[in-house]
Image 1 (cartoon, rainbow, N blue to C red):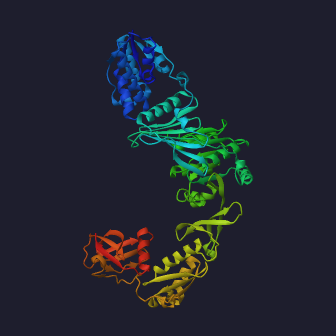
Image 2 (spheres, rainbow, N blue to C red):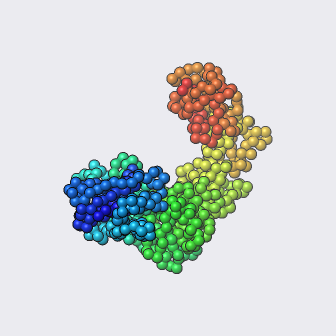
Image 3 (cartoon, helix red, strand yellow):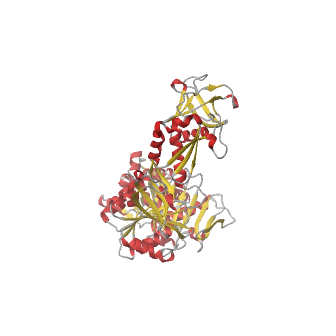
Length: 630
């Protein structure tokens, strides 16, 4: 008897199984080199099937050593193109050639291979793929580490098994066994996970890449990491420990009414492990139970939802393709778990603007942070149309709900009517009081907290003071300090000989600044400051053209006087420093940045950059600015 097994039969271990049962006793097992090549390629790519097939070949060698069977290798090894084309049947064709040349029976667990081989006149023995039921096992071996309070189990070679256990918001990461996990043990767990996922209707392989496999089995999501992706073998198994109903949460009735009123754009935010996905599941079940067609977009698919909710993953690895498909299906609501990368936000926005109700799960440490992640990814004026509700989850409960609207108005704290603009208003859902405003100010997108606490500087005040400083520094030649008297008035202190320059002829220059900012500005000298004043002429400002270099200073640096212009902060280092030389700029001998001296012996830093802001702050506080050879 001559038997030629294909890759499926070898990986499933069906050859040694039939030898040990006596069915193939004394047979010659002719293993195609094409099978060996495919298994070797799979093992090198980090796929468990490759290692399982190699282990089966080793068992056949042991059986041959015991004179139970004889083993031969025959045929040609597949080239790189044939290995890549294995899914298209390239390897299967080579195996059929070996069976035909050897006048042997082809053993396979692949129904397509069996039917094609019969069509070509070959003798075929088809065996069903190894199923979980045949092993007599029920469930995963790793399940023994879970109890009713365990959210996740973490296994790593040469480390004690650990688990996160407790209640939502009160989880503890703790060792659950004294003995360390061996590499052999963790490989057995990984093998069990893969076999169970392939054979069970309750499981599937979500991702299988070199070094990483993600499996969904019942309520468990299991990630198996291997070298070279990780520095050692590791298994992380996660499952939800509670399933909630929307009625279990605060604001439940109001949220229900809001969700059913019309299709909404909702962001569910919170820190990792806070209970975002659990809340999203409750929302999905509620919507599905109230005459809504609900779908999910997940990678991996791990939301525990009812059978009437279809769960979709990334089609061809791309959620945009999934969105295109869903727009044809036209669900009433889609649960997007999770919205993280720019592409995710763009897909979320595209589906929402197409009229689909969207519920996105977003990692954020504050409720406002979830909305700010849309800034720069979605046109500012479109944000309220994409997201009108933000729900922040903390310790398994609804902590904050924000209502997001847009209005053309003068931002809070400003008064000039010509400063009216579109303002995104984020209000507390419970009280209706505005909590934040987002708008463009001086060509920048700003998020301003509306803090009414007495005696503290509000977000509007901080913004106003910063902008007044920036405007006056672009005019003044010396030191500038700003104090606010309320949100609409400011006092600017400048060098005495800068007073007339800042005010301008007939007050025209300062009036222009007041009109741009909507703030009344009183210009005074630094000596008039209530704190006692500052020595006149000591600061550095813009436009004087007096920047020079003086030898000496800490660490033998050259002291410089930077100039602040409307567009740049200019450091003049022409005396004693060559053009093209790399230098360090320091403030009170503290490193600020490294730069190359340009033509004219100057270093120019664009205003608005982080480096320029730091340098201007140093200038404003009269710190000693020095230049040193790099």
